[in-house]
Image (cartoon, rainbow, N blue to C red; front, side, top):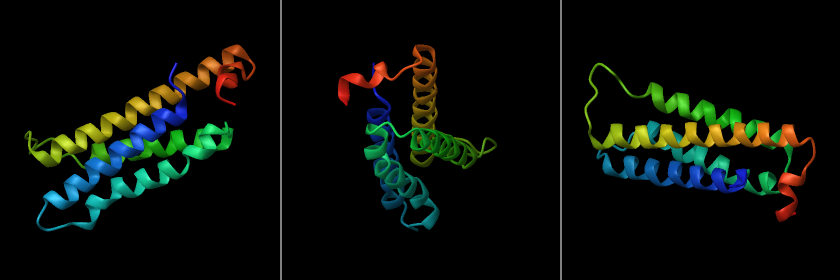
Length: 124
C-alpha cells in the first residue's frame, strides 16, 4: 500500500517539474505557467502533516489536488488541441492530480472500513 504522503510528494514534484519545464520552454514566460508549480509547492508543504495523519490536511489536500486537476484540464482547448509540448505537460499534470485524488479517496475508504488507524500503524 502506498501512503498518501508519498503520493502527495510525487504529485507535487510532477507539478513543480513539469510546470517549470513549461515556463522555461516558452520564450514569452507567461505567469500563468507558474500556477502548477505554485500549487506543487503548497502540496509539498502539506506532506509533513499528511505523514502525521492530520485528517483536516488530508481533506484539504484532496480538494486542492482536484481543484488543480480541473484547472489544468480547463487550460486545454479541445478545438485547437494538438500534441505539442504545452498540451502534453498539461495532460501529464492533470492526470497526475486525478490519479493522486483517486489514491487519496481510496485511502479514505479503506481507513473508514477498518474503523481504526491500523492502516497507518507501520509508519507512526
